[in-house]
Structure formats: C-alpha cells, structure tokens
Length: 91
Image 1 (cartoon, rainbow, N blue to C red):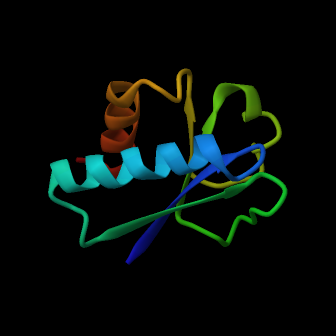
Image 2 (image 1 turned 120 degrees about the horizontal axis):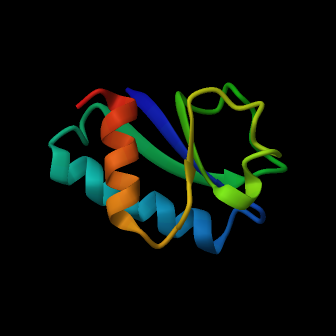
C-alpha cells in the first residue's frame, strides 16, 4: 500500500483537513485500497514517511526535500487537490 502524507506547519488542523480530503478523493476515484493518507508536521516529516507528500504553497521551499511533492495553492480547494492527485497517481 502506498502512503500519501499531508504536511503542514504544526501537523494539526490544516494537514488533518487535507488528509480527510485525500481520503474522500481516493474513495471517489476508486483507489482507496491502494493508498492510505496520513498527516504530520513539517518538523516531524522525513522523506521516507510516504510515497507522495502534499503541502501548502507557503511551505513549498521548506518541504522541497520531500519526494513526489504536491503543492497546493489553496488547501480549501478540493478540486485542485483532486486534479493534482490524479496527475501524480497517473489516473
């Protein structure tokens, strides 16, 4: 199972919200059995924690060491997240 990690500054509110949105989108796309979503803080994340990482535009530079990074212009835009996930997952 591949892992998708939502990353924010504190590892609490916004990353948890993005994790829930990722889970919803994986269910919508019918691939939830292939992926699991989690969340963490930028301070605690390492490149081995997941296969794909998702973060906000304001953390892009700080998270640039993470592989397969999805950078969101808006954490609230579920459509943006869906399109970028589909592209990264090649769906």
